[in-house]
Image (tube, rainbow, N blue to C red; front, side, top):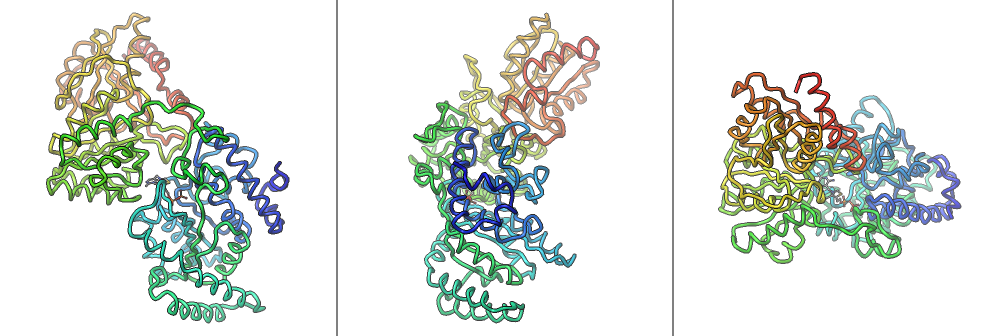
Length: 625
Ligand SMILES: Cc1ncc(C[n+]2csc(CCOP(=O)(O)OP(=O)(O)O)c2C)c(N)n1
């Protein structure tokens, strides 16, 4: 029964409800989210945790004129339901459906796109400064989790915002969890703050005094701030946020709509930067998620009664990586693992169990992860860092400045490389090959299956210089090739010989190349299939030989075309002066790829085997291949 939700299509309807109705609405929203995520998959626990917070925000603030920036943006399902998208939520994360993250193209209430962690305070501060310059009185609110707050960008923004006079409100959604239990010194500090209940009560009392005063002018607020600072000095001798320059309100129970609304109302009268500390429970209202918030942070579709995934989880690349690393670490005590808040997602959970002293979870801090790994490498260790492709984007300078210029032996494993699917454009791993390939001193590999990943990892930890190994999400492209030759530096693998067309592919696309070759065989086009294995150094010997023979080459890669495999092959053809060679490159052409299933997206971009084969036939008829 969605008795209240049926009456609420937008924030106007929400604002008409009384507290009792809003509490009932919160229950109904939880049921709705549970149902949608159990069917479509998505970020469950974080959304269940912010139901009351979202209701209170839209009740008090004048959205969309007041702007809410959701950090990471994975917790915006309630926000989407309350801002006019209730009836499309069944399309959540599906191709052309509602995105799993805020999208300005979707609604004016999504005032900024997010997806990567720790950006919200910077953006909010920028908007607040622009408001001030334009003399607009609207509030700008950044909602950031305690996990995202550990990110360097958030800390840089706090430092700047605190010393500014901008009307920016930071809502710290503190559930003591990142994806897993939050880590680092900041978490100890927050846990100390959480215990200052007395201070909260005093705050609420102060607020009550304010609200009873008929005309709340700035001068009164200033007096109140002074009183509050006085109280702070009595009860909390040193308060980090206040010292930074924020007015700190809280901690407040994030599941009590009435309390949240009253703190938010108070905050509107305070000029300058405000930080409201809200305590929530991840997974709130669905017992299985409350007890396993990490499992239900992001989940595939599941059965609500048992919490079990609808599809049995198969072996995947992350696990293949984790298993092999354990095997290697047993033989080599210099191997250590580094993760940026993603131990589980990157397959390192078992490694952590077996080698608790040789794994370092640095929090959501990719730049720091690579800088720290560089330091360990300098002191003789062999750090193996595993980060998702799109999150490496954060740490490009560390790759160049801290690792590659000094030629340090850091192994950079790039998980979720290529199309990841439903999380959409911020999460697609399309850029890693192109940006790593530009950097001197680096070796770049991508395996065609789990076994090859293992061999590449073994090769990498013994190379004694910077190495990248990229592999896709799940088990996609995991081929049934029976044999896997050992890795030789810079050597490709010829999978099948042929005379009409060379197909060069890398990583999961090697399987695609074989499928294309099989389809073209039916058209009597005899293909030579090469598994590049190395993007850098590219095997110029094998590739040149093949192209001189066939005079025609196509490349297939799971990444952006500019700067990737295709570009490298074209450069090679130029350098080797292979006259008359025809080339066609298949990959993602200068585009951000939206959300949808991997298969759908590949088809959309002309990358499934049938489309490639058809395209080759057409090009051959046109005599351009
Ligand atoms: C730069 C970056 N690194 C890693 C991630 C993956 N990630 C998504 S949500 C999340 C945890 C966020 O924790 P918190 O901010 O506390 O939000 P909660 O889910 O607990 O509400 C992580 C690590 C990301 N989105 N961006």
